[in-house]
Length: 210
Image (cartoon, rainbow, N blue to C red; front, side, top):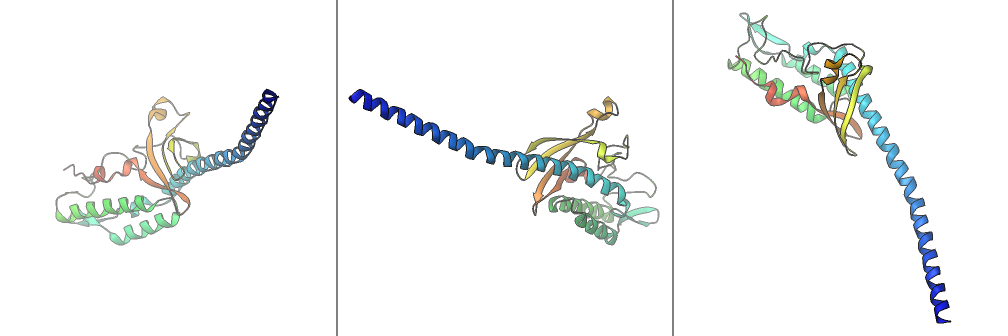
């Protein structure tokens, strides 16, 4: 009789544990589904952010950003009013985080300081002392197309509020595919924004070549 009771208790315990496990699985499935949908949504938002930001860059006149002051055929600094207006446009676009805008501002101020002090010399009509020969927005001299929807965005690492990625051009030849441009994005005020761009590293952009 004792063995029958023991067996009954063991069976009851196993049944209860089985029910508990099924209940936990039922509860876990919706959470997993929500997390997966959120991750997919974030990836789509980051992809869209990068492409929309480049459309904005193409449309906006970037020459206003570093508009030079010329004196006696020498560029002796930049126009702060034009720079301020461009920075306002950049903020209003909603594509760029505070971190990135601050980096751009620091680059502008340092280059302006070096030109005004004479530590950097720039003859009007010639390549500047900070010029690397490529466009900082892409580290390139041209692009295979102006259709930025065709950019290939590859997210390498991602959390709920940061992502590291690169973009390249796929379908335009091996050389274009091998060129990777790295970007870091963050969530700021609940929206994905660009925080760092490979071509806009501070130290790289304040080196004087003359």
